[in-house]
Amino acid sequence: MENRVKPVGDQGIMISFGNEISDEINGSVTNFVADFRKKNFEGIIDIIPAYSSVLISYEPFVWGYPEIKKEVESLLDNKKDSEKKRKRIYEIPVCYGEEFGQDMETVVAHTG
Image (cartoon, rainbow, N blue to C red; front, side, top):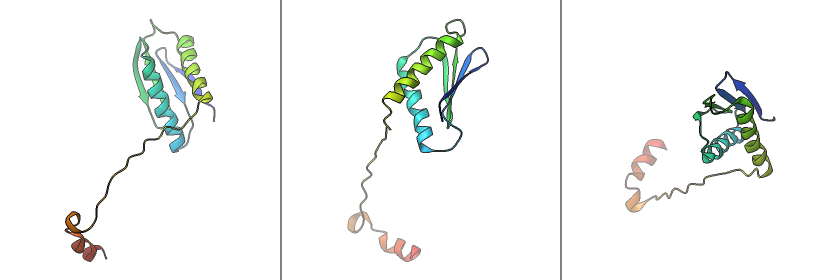
């Protein structure tokens, strides 16, 4: 689904990334918000991410809808050109037995 950009009143813009629950869509939302915040635009009141959309509220005396739409679409177009899924990989060390698992026999007996 193409990103849909539409006005929300005279002080907001909504960017929709889809209408389903998926890690890919939510990742796109997360990446867009991070990239938009890096721009540090003046006159942005709030950036409100949801699962598959982002609402940006802005000062109407600083931004007009056409101007902010242009910035948003530019950021979306740049993202399409270099669409790489950002992942964080966390390694959590786990130790079992002997000194680290002193309650192992109790847990095994309880859980089978």
